[in-house]
Image 1 (cartoon, rainbow, N blue to C red):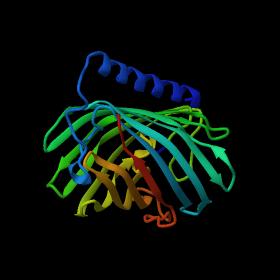
Image 2: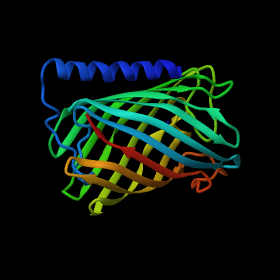
Image 3: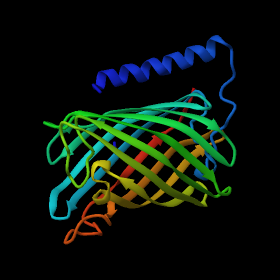
Length: 280
């Protein structure tokens, strides 16, 4: 997954300004946490007063059980900001489809609060996505608990459980949007990351999801993806992350009735994400 763009920019700007003014007015030091260069050692939320602009380039090909949407190319521009060590906000303000036709896609806002630190980190996250596809429209709200497990100095697991509610647009599954209704979905992601030789890391992604509880038995899917990344840093921490990825978002669909395909290698996404870290 990736309301009005001006509204999103206004909210994220207000959050950034409010966080900066509060910290300076109280004469506080910068965040007590330092951002480690190896990905496996990084926390669930950005340290206080850390701004991380993000640029993503992606290619999606969708051929699901004979339903062919072809190939599209997109570009995302957004940012995350650590207001406090345990509070991070973020937005994707410029999601653009470059081909087969140019268009503005689905902006989103999110906030994450970390309430448990240590080897296992827990948080609460809310994300709102505004569906802008022509003749679709609607809002998707995702809320849940992200979980970060520091397996070792070289390995981490990112997981959690997230409920989604879609108002007016329905949940996208197999290229299908169910307009004019409220839909409920579930997402349990799982990602394992290993720092091969810091700052180089590789990882695998999977998980479990139900795209629509109104037809839960037929709308179960399991994604499968592969990620890699390289971090450039200095004594302050990472300066730039470069992360290529390749994923099958609907790799296995065990509930699809026969003669539908249970394995869907024809639907895939690949791309490159770059993140810059600014320590304010």
